[in-house]
Image (cartoon, rainbow, N blue to C red; front, side, top):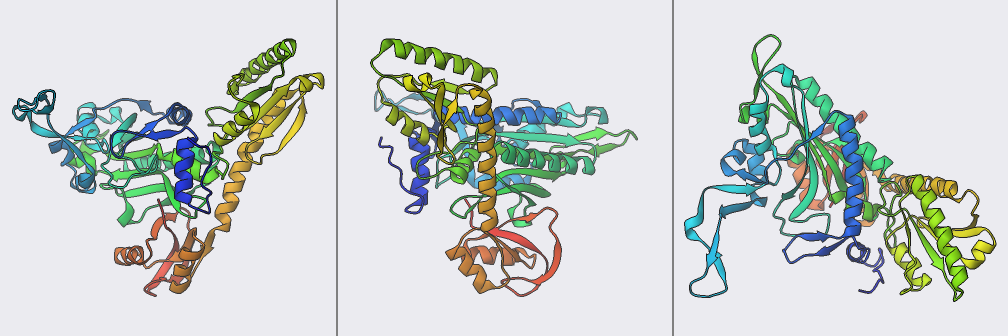
Length: 493
């Protein structure tokens, strides 16, 4: 596969696909709408997962695992949730195949193996989890129940795109139960903050915290909180959601507890999740026309050392020895490093390959460098390179990784601020969407009908009502009706 990328300006969509495929993150599979996550991409997901898992556990959550299959009767129990996901469900109807008597070597579904009740392949796990919680929760002493699950889910998407929208994807889903409404809302807000901190501190991705409109809420939720990020093409991407479910699922599955006053009450619930879609967000937020750009804190590989060999065997051994020493010192600082001494490719090819993969720091080490007690250090974010003394090189690299992390965040934040505008008229709103996409802060009259009409006319949606939004009197950009605050519009993935 050629490593030449389509430029962002020429075709942003193709540029994204090129990066995912040629950067070694994922590949297409034999299953329509599904992807294969390659080792480099999975290493990135593992780093994301490990950080998030630690953050979940620091806030008191534990991991568990629930079945992939949900009996249809359970799935139907919470009507809004079932209706919201019905069109995306894959359904198991039989449990056995048999040899086709009319076409030897081929298999057919055995009609005698029809299930008594169809099984839904989980699009989300509220139904199976709340049916289980009914047996786990008896008293206020059992609360709060703070459970997270790392799993895969299936949503039968018709139009798919690697990482951003696939029929099967990896994610985590938290499901918690509480004694009071106030505790559940606090949990919902806490987990939104966990997601936001992860996005900003590890992905170097600035996000806007907000709450969804009723039209955009999770099916079955009382409120959906979200973090929204802006991609380099001016489109928004929802990077995480946290839902206050009220007592909807508790009532649907009859989950009650004996309170301290010895009265039976329904529990209050939350759910929250992020998925491998975060990888798509990372690619689109930071990368350039030369390849991926990885934030150091979650990059699968933070530093690569490329030797510059000549034909002198003694000089080669010295380079190998110095590289081994560097690797030991860098790993002692917790830095993920690789020494690429493969003779089958030339240094120039390696430089281009690691630039394509977005490795934050590259160290070139040759015989002349050793003579001068230095190495050449290149940083991926700015493409700057400079000689650095071998004395204190590990401290220099550690500091450089933090500088790159900060620079990527600041660069993405500056881009978002440059592409966020307050607009007050319909004509200006439509013009801005077509000419300079980004976030638009505008007044909306609060009705779902107006929200749907704006979406129909422009393909722009209300991404969120920002938390701590200031209230100001205004007029809806479409209807001219009174409005008390601005909301955030954008076209989105």
